[in-house]
Figure (cartoon, rainbow, N blue to C red):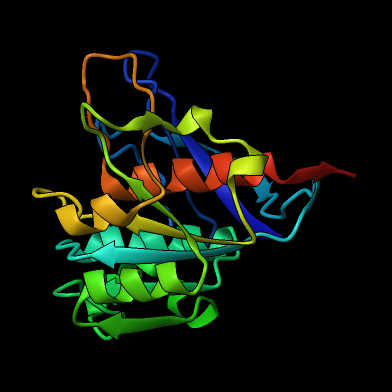
Length: 212
């Protein structure tokens, strides 16, 4: 258990409240200069187990993702959902770069990964090996992610994520079993690629979730 403090300004007009490490905090408000009240807490940083999911072999291809931070975030989500492998293709940054490691928080150790120069060649081989290919991309011809059912997923699934500007290679889209997009009802019609990946993983995990 991690111990920490929450500090609150005694000035009612300021009323600033914020958390801090237990051995590294001041006694005066950084905004108004009045004294701070100290409240000590213990962080419950465990994780409740809600059930077990059935076996689903998930892998992912990153097709020329440009952002190191997106790659790190994707690796972290991949670790959380027990992905079997991440393929970093083209100019996608690898965990050899410090910016990727900074965001992945060690996930590059628990998730097997490799680099490939050509995402299309890799996906073609996976298709021949019997993988179900799902490209995640918003377009006028995409299907809703919510239309996927457990029956539409085979034992081995390959998720493809594309470049933040140009999307997934059109030739990969052509050989995909489905191009899926996340239904969005708000004004903004696009999601960060790492966010879209996390939502997709969570939905797939729901399809195979078994209650305790």
